[in-house]
Image: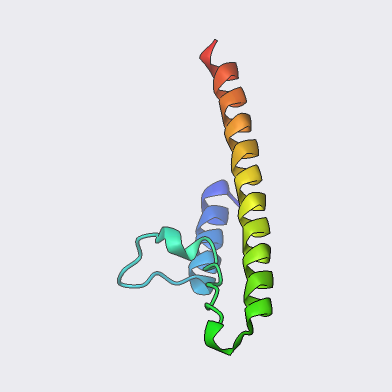
Length: 85
């Protein structure tokens, strides 16, 4: 079997499994699955104590997100320094 006939066979198998559509351009949205969106809680049903606890939990999560942003920015600036020189 020659390299050309092997590549033809591979293409035929590939396009039988993944056929081209009329709109065959690659869509970047198809590469990553969509992230789940959080539905807001019904605050009307929560007591004052539950609302205060909810605020504390949200503030803790926001602090966790800020920490991750700081780590990623430090990592990014460290990499930029490596490639600068």
